[in-house]
Image (tube, rainbow, N blue to C red; front, side, top):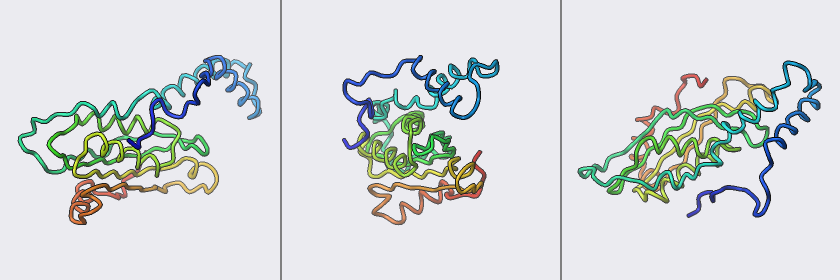
Length: 209
């Protein structure tokens, strides 16, 4: 397996910071930004932000490989593409900790067994709800499906807007980044890849919000 190990990234023997540690760090950031964490409107902000971080980074508590373990073989010989498109993607840029908002399209060619479609969406969340760059995220989703299911091929396309580019730095709103990872038949057979892209209609000009 070449997927991200689970639990990911935690240094061996390094204790996880406590809730109090997190809230104290947020108070420090509030002071650094120039505000007073003791004023009425900010009194509960450290607790709220820490709770929000638990949601935004819930992917660190999920094992994507385990999510894909249960599959089904009673498919009556079905061997055409399975595609789940327009999966809502919410992630966080690891360089500026700003939101990445978009959608993922995931497809595979089954080799005798299929996975529940909700599991595909959960794999996107498991990798998305971590500190990420879009290129790595796209590869992780595709690689884990290929390694666990061993299909004839996997295709993943991610379209997303990066707030680190739209609200700071270059200040270019409306820009969408598109990345793809094609494995197996989707890489080797041009007609298969083109069929997948035609079915998801990517890239599209519809807004990502």
